[in-house]
Structure formats: C-alpha cells, structure tokens
Image (cartoon, rainbow, N blue to C red; front, side):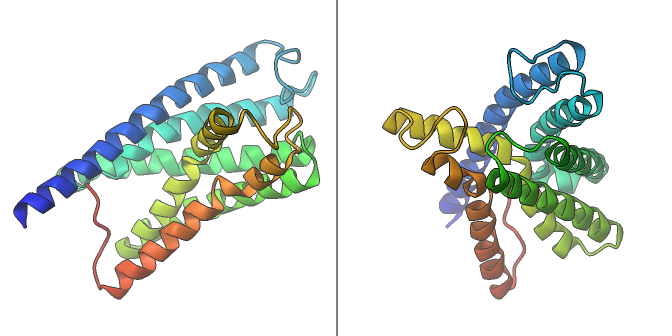
Length: 227
C-alpha cells in the first residue's frame, strides 16, 4: 500500500513538473510577444495588433503578459508541501494569480468588445465566455479564501487553474491536430470545422471533467489529493 501511495505521489509530482515546463515555455513566448506588442508596431506580424488603437493594444498585449505570469505561477499552487509548510507563500502567489487573472479576463473582454476576434461572432462568444468564466472563478477563489471557506476556495481555485492553462491547451490542441491530420478542417482565418470546435474545446471539456472529479471527491467526503 505504501509503495502504491509513493508511486502515485511520484506520478503527481512528475505531472506538475511536466505541466510547469510546458507552461514556462509558452509563457516565455507570450511574455516576449506581449512586450513587443506594447513597444512596436506589429500590424504586419499579427492581426491582433490595432494600428493607432492604444487602448485595444494595451488590453490584448497586457492580457498576454499577465497571462504568462499567471501560467508560470499556477503549478506551484498544486504542491501541498508549499501550502502546508509555507502558507504565506501560497497566499502571496494566490493573490498574484487572482489579480493577474482578473486583469487578463477584463483585458480580453475589452479587446473583444473593441475589435472582436478574427473569426467573427461564434469565436467572439466562445472567447468572451472563457473570459467571463475566468473572471468569475478568480473573484470566487479570492472571496472564499478571505472568508476562510477553504474547501470551496480549493474547488474554485482548481477551476481557475484550468482556465489559466487554457491558452496553452488551445495551442496544444492545434499542435496535436496538425501533427495527426496536417490541419484538416482548419484555416488561417480560424473558421474551419475544427477551429469552430476549438472555440469551446480548450476549456469546457476540462471544466466538465474537473466538475465530475469534484463531485466524486465530495461524495467520498474527502478533500483534493494534490502532490
């Protein structure tokens, strides 16, 4: 039994390390791109840049920079040893993630309202829903932590974790799909059948899986089992 528990713990730690490594690589790219977008004209490089649109550019590139910061930090919140031995560090990282997530969500929603997404109304809706869910989860995680309701805080923090990782998941879906199908059902305007599924597939299935796990955890009368 002890061997099984040790193996399970090792697998969880390995998962956190792999996740953290992937998040660090993507976050570095996002941070560099966001900083470039705030400093120079990227209209010939990316459609998300708005020539002369200072507010829209600040919203979207600030969104990228703070999203990168949140993505790097969230794996640390999964490590029980940090929560138990250094609760002050857990709280400090959590506040940074929540504030970054709120700013990321608001920035994305502002950008969608000002310019819309590349693919039109359906993508606008999918990404706006994603931003609204992130905003709601961040507020709930903060509110419940401050109220001392740590069981419910844990559930909302896990939901926020899934959403923070959404940008990485979105791109991993494309990388896997293109490696398997050479981009079947996708195009540069992101209006193909695969693209339209992706407007929602990078966060809704993962939130649904988490909800099932949370229900099972609650029915067993136990708290989350994290590394």
